[in-house]
Image 1 (cartoon, one colour):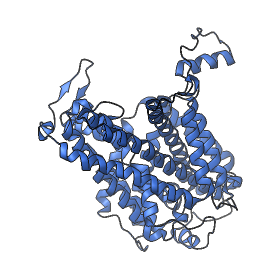
Image 2 (spheres, one colour; image 1 turned 45 degrees about the vertical axis):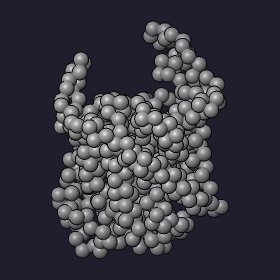
Image 3 (cartoon, helix red, strand yellow; image 1 turned 60 degrees about the horizontal axis):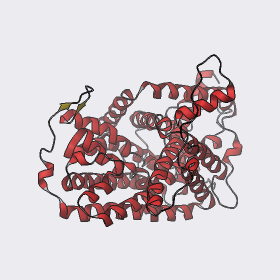
Image 4 (cartoon, helix red, strand yellow; image 1 turned 30 degrees about the horizontal axis):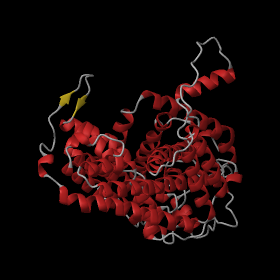
Length: 502
């Protein structure tokens, strides 16, 4: 087999479909609504509790509802393509597995390696944010953590310690720490706790996640149900505020502001892809996975738009620029009890985001190892619990260290590029498969695929273009490490290494 043939070798869709019924790695315990809850859990988080208000205040005004609709349209293009793949290839691994079937091994490895980092960092970022909400509630109850355990050390403090460990190397001395912050204990603890929950029994974790998502949805419905009676239509005028440029030369509002808001909240309208990583734990994957993908996005979008309209209706949009904008909006109209209830729902509900993305990361790691691209030791399912315990626990420890030690800004920069890259591959692959294999029996077909899929690619490419350069640098470094691992290990140990398929 030539070198190029090794890079593009793949299993056929028929082979993957045949293996679905014969594999017994996992117990099939997830029904439609549990899968949908995983998707909703991955989508609804800081987007609804933070970004809706912040983007109304900074960029879109009351038209932030339009920002969510625009972002939702772009995300829906990818969701429709995911749904078609999920019905065709209900196998653990999501975009990695879909890429393996259509584009070949090397591209599949790249996207799997990419998503592994992205999902893990989402867990770390959300854990850090979750810790902040929890500490606010603890402080209000008179409970205060020691200073060292409240937050991670600052970037300057970390540089100071690194300089002390590795020497001066001719550089100027860095000042010693100015605060006592050393490790975000709550962020680390919740990362480990979610990993343990996912390890013990999948059905227990899924039931817990469904309960958490239900609490989160109740919190969102509380915002809508109570807030609708306090809407002052005057707060919606003008619906799209006039364009202004601030003292730093940055523009806000107008249609450009609506589009800027859409690019920001776009990252609040994906997460449904995490549920497709649990394909082999679904009772009826070819039927339920496409439905769950579309249901979770549709429910989330209705809630996003409704909350956006309520928030900007009960208080002027300029008042929504806080980190807990939903609670603050109700506090501003004298509904303190609603404000507290929403804060509690946010703390409880964001846990489901941790659950969804750690589940996704562990399943992708498992799939990479099962296909031979990583050591088979990681593909051993726990005989007691029936879960991929090894990658799950390692991910729990890794995300705990990242969330505990690093500032949130340092962690967040790499989060978005992975999902956008996956969206491009999924949308491109679905068109390629329509050309190569029009004969396949599809349980769900992406409507208007020659319009929908290219639109999804354009949305994703534009948003990747807008990312800061540091994101590209770190992404390139991670991809370089991945290439070294693949060419040193994966290309030789792949389960398809002895196959002549191309």
